[in-house]
Image 1 (tube, helix red, strand yellow):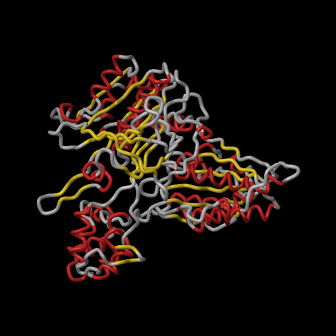
Image 2 (cartoon, helix red, strand yellow):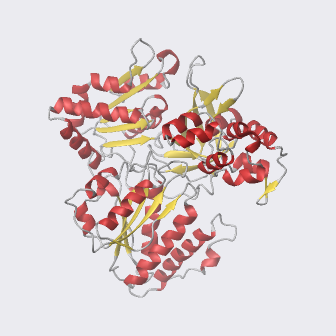
Image 3 (cartoon, one colour):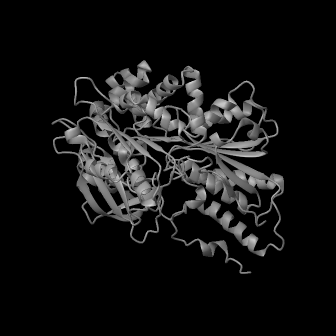
Amino acid sequence: MSVLPPTGQLIPVDAPFSAAQESWLAGFIAGIAAAGTATAPSTPTTTVDVLFGTQTGTAEALADQLVAGATARGLGGRARALDDVTPEQLAGMSHVLVVTSTYGEGEMPDNAGLFWDAVQASTVPRLEGLQYAVLGLGDTSYDEFCQAGKLLDTRFEQLGATRVHDRVDCDVDYEDPAALWTAAVLDRIAAETGATGGTGATGTVTTGTTAAGGAGSTRASRPGSQWTKRNPYPARLVENRLLSDPRSAKEIRHYEFDLGDSGITYAAGDALAVVPVNDDTLVDHLLEHLGATGDETFDGRSVRELLRTDREVRTPSKDLIADLVQRAPASELAAVVAHGDKQELDRWLWGRDVLDLLRDAGDTAPGLDELLPFLRPLQARQYSISSSPLAHPDRIHLTVASVRYGDDHRKHSGVASTHLADRVQVGDEVGVYLQPNAAFGVPADGDAPLVMVGPGTGIAPFRGFLHERAASGATGRNWLFFGDQHRDTDFVYADELSALQADGVLTRLDLAFSRDQAEKVYVQTRMREQSRELYAWLEDGATFTVCGDASRMAKDVEAALLDVIATERGRGADDAVDYLADLRRAKRYVRDVY
């Protein structure tokens, strides 16, 4: 049996890894090397259960890494979504690692809500025999930073479990702290249980579709990719066309990226992360206001390039807001913050970027050197993929609304959406990487019915779903609820949808154009109008999927769905909630919301 070369020879000096990642990877490779010299593989005596809660797939990917790391250390490992675990199963586990993001304003992600409800019950089993640790993923720009992880960490402790390692709360740049936490937790468990690397054990990844008709695909079918946030693939833009009518109040565009030799394989329902570049005009105005040329350096980088590619200059950070309030306690911003009303602060901040706040602060504003540490790292923007790999294996399609607002005094625009629309030409390269979402996809059973609710750009993944069902020969019925403001100007992909109807792929299409009549009509209006038929589809095993705005649309759609269930079953609101919970458990109510 061949023996791997020393770890240092396997990790090139110019590899795009941080020190923390190299440390974790070195341990993983060492485990594999030990496996190559082991004389008698043995069965692991300790299994690490990795439970994840995710909205976009990041926590799920980290769960896979934890299983791989456990295996390398001679531990057993298996990863599952939190909602796939009952309190009774949890009580039977010995070592649990929880990785969870936080959705919205401190809420559990979609595949963790049922678990959270269950462990709060007064009858939940005690967990005295359990050792655990929690890794939280979040964004400090939100008030309830990593709240889901904090809640689960506290609840496990209340139930008597023993914390094997302190919780770590990760901001958007999670890679280094997550890698350090992973290495520390797994090393400690391995040391305390006497596990040794190289037992030949393999991690069991059990998430994905577990019920007939459920959405999503198995985790085992999702290969990894070398292209990441730190190492994006330079994809060539091959198409950029306007979908909405020029008369529309919106600007919705269709983009296509050539995957070339990237090796990227995607699934309908995945997202594509686009690495943006800030608008040069905005950067120029910001430098001018600061009295800088851009040729100055900060941490060895040109300030101009730093502001263009590495710093968020659209959305002011909480640290910057706090600094401005401290500098000018009598300012309008300080007065709003003093009220302690988050909604009022959000309204005041809406549409204001970093330059706006600096101008408002006047002479009290921080200078260049003081400002730069307050600017958050510029993040990639994720967009639901609107194509199917069965129909377009070498390309990824996106459906993106260009964000533009403001007046003659100041024009504002979205970071990534207008970068694509205005500053990237066909033939240019854009940094991208795949964000898999195993929990959101077409039903594994091609005969199962599928209901899709996606107004506006929420139609994106459902265009991919329909192409997937057509290309795979799926026979299940497909029902799409779509809407926007005006049919004449906002009915994107109208010709495609008509063709899919004519071909028998799209069984039903219910449209809701809110401003084509005096009384506004939305997709949830159409749902209630088709209450009996919609419930019949659910009873026939349909998967109900939603994509779009989380703050209003998704909540309104869920309320309408509960109304439909309560009306047709006639057993009251509590029964409807239980019915919907059963759909969630069966992976038949899934959402891709943002």
